[in-house]
Image (cartoon, rainbow, N blue to C red; front, side, top):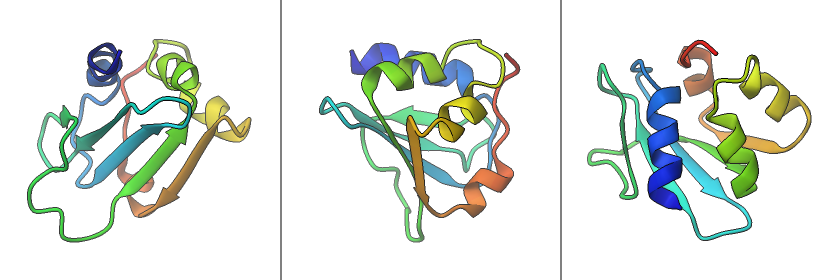
Length: 102
C-alpha cells in the first residue's frame, strides 16, 4: 500500500519547493517523506539526510491521501478546507509548494 501511495505522490509533487514534507496516514502505519530540496522531489519512507530545520506535516486518513494524489482539480484545497487533511509544522513550505496540474 505504501509503494502505491508514494507512486501517486510522485505524480503530485513534480517540482522542487525548497523544503521537506512528511505525509502520515492516521488510520494505518503508512508514512513517507517528500524532500523538495531537489529539482525533482525525492519521495521515500526514510527521513531525508540533512534535515536540520523543521518540516511540514500532512496527516489524513489513508483513503483521503490516495484521493489527494489523484488528478482531481483543486484536490489539495478541498481536502484541507473540509478538514480531512491536517497541515502543521513549517508552513513556509506550503507557500513555496507547487503541485502538478489536475
